[in-house]
Length: 256
Ligand code: PGA
Image (cartoon, rainbow, N blue to C red; front, side, top):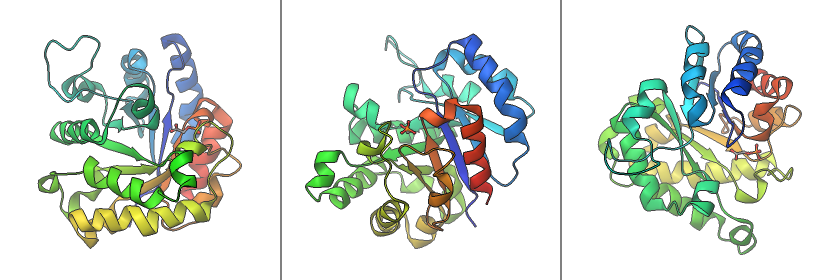
C-alpha cells in the first residue's frame, strides 16, 4: 500500500548554522519513527551541510525548487543535476512560487519532467486560492493544475513507479494562516478531483498508488485528523516543520 510521507518545507528560513542545529535536534526523534518516508527541505544554501548530517539516516533531503535546464546562462538558477547531487526530492509548484515568482502550470510541467529525468522525486503542489474557492472553482483549478502539471509525461509512469512522484494538495488560503482545511474538505478534493485527474492521465492503478498529501497549517495537534483519512497519505508542513516537537509529533501521527 502507500507508505505515509511527511515533508518539512523550511521555506526561506535558517542559516547554515541554524539548519545544522535544527537537523541535529530533529534526527533522533525522526529516526525513531518507522514506516514513514520523512523528508526535510531546507534552503539551497543549507543543502550541503544537511546532506552530510542526514547521511546514514533514513531521513531524505529535498530542495524547494529547480530549473528545468541542466546547465546554462541562467543567473541565479539551480539545475536538476545540481539538486540531484545532494537531494532525492524536490518541491515543485508551491503556491508561493506561483504567486511571487511567476510559476505557471507550464513551468511546473517542465520542472516535473526535469525532476523525473534526473531521478528526483517531485512533490508537486496544487491548490486553489481563496477567491477561487469562494467562487466554487476548486475542482476546476486543481484538476487543471494536475492535468497541465503532469502533461506529456505518461512515459515516466507505470503503476510500479507511482512512488516516484508525490502530490500535495495545499489550498492557498490554508497556508501559513492558521486556518487549515477540514480533514473532510481535503479528503473530498483528493478523492473527487486529484485521484480522478491522475487516473485519467495515467490509469486507475497509478492514481491509487501515488501518495497525495495535505498541506496548509498542519500542526502537531491537528495532523492526526488528516492521517485518519485513508485517502490522505501524509503532509507537507511549513511553519511547524521548524519546530522540533511539532514536526516530530506530525511524523509520529503519520506512522499511526
Ligand atoms: P504551513 O505551510 O504549514 O506553514 O501552512 C505549508 C506549505 O507552505 O507547504
